[in-house]
Amino acid sequence: MNQKNSLGLNSCFMDLDDPLELFKIWMAKAEKKEIRDPTALSLATTNNAGQPNVRMVLLKGLSSKGFVFYTNLNSSKSNELKENSKAAMCFHWKSFNRQIRILGSVTQVDVREADLYFNSRSYESKISAWASDQSKPMKQRSELLKKIEDLNEKYKDEKNVPRPPHWSGWCLKPSSIEFW
Image 1: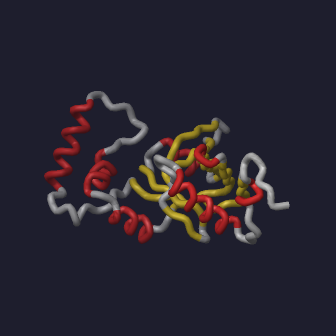
Image 2: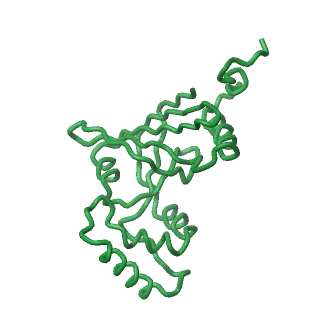
């Protein structure tokens, strides 16, 4: 049967043994069809009390080890991942009626990998990583602007902004991947 159904499923599920290969094919299509942020995903975590939490992050790497995203290690998401390494991801691409759900466990990426990615970021993004007290209330915007000004002064050489010790990546090793 060569007919496509309404979701185009006959053409989107290929005879592949490796779900990561199918993910790469779908991501390549998303990068062409999605207007904004094809790498955006919902990340679900829970704390030790079992309270779920979900937020959007961007996929920044994919390998045989798993799916990688970067964040402030003092953020609520990192604190929850330190408490409970189980997490879930969901990619949704409305433009071509597909989503991928991924369940698994996370580990922190190694220092070399975190440094390599951090050094690929723009100067402004590096300064923001230093300036952000993610998940903490800000009293006044002027405090953040002053912090950024001080960091710009401290790191005048745009090529020599080190990775903050409170900033790194997490890798979700999948135990289950659902294509829909």
